[in-house]
Image (tube, rainbow, N blue to C red; front, side, top):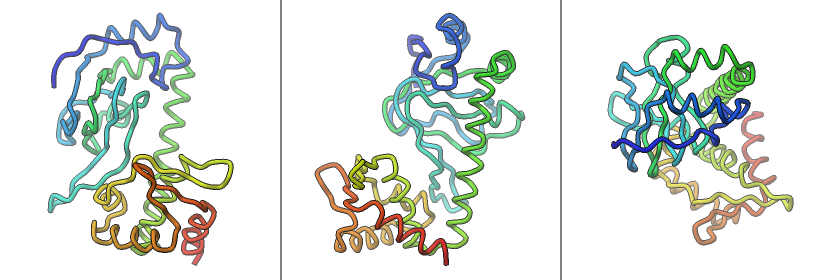
Length: 232
């Protein structure tokens, strides 16, 4: 970790409703740090309650089981933010944050975060929307873990990834090709299970490898596979 020259916060979605001048004031009151790939940004056991504004790069939200197995919650791109739960209630961190690429983070103190949300309804609305997304995603994940087998959870995760690359022609692209261990971490299974499921899907032409991308030639077919099992 090293000091970084402050940049602007114009890309941070949370602050889009503010004027450039208001964002500049916040930027001057943040602590800025640069992180290398795989470097820890926030440790779950730390006393920090700052909100992390991801100015550049990409980060992963993770936790670890008692045996040391990594559990992935989410990946956040530049423009996103993390850590609002601890800033709001003063409680401990719920997860750790690790840089996936070269990453620039602006750390916003809990006081500054709460003052900004209180004074600017647009910011408060963004926070509420994100908290709603967290609840919905958590509910869906709990349901999948409770009702789907390991193979079906892999299917569901691929469906989630494919939705972001859905095209008008009904095909979908996933770029880059997801790493088996990453999928395993997200859906609480093993790399071997993911590899076996991916091989089966490839054999059935449900997914096709194309360079650094994974093509889903018939998104609806994959969606039906997942929804049929969820409906049982």
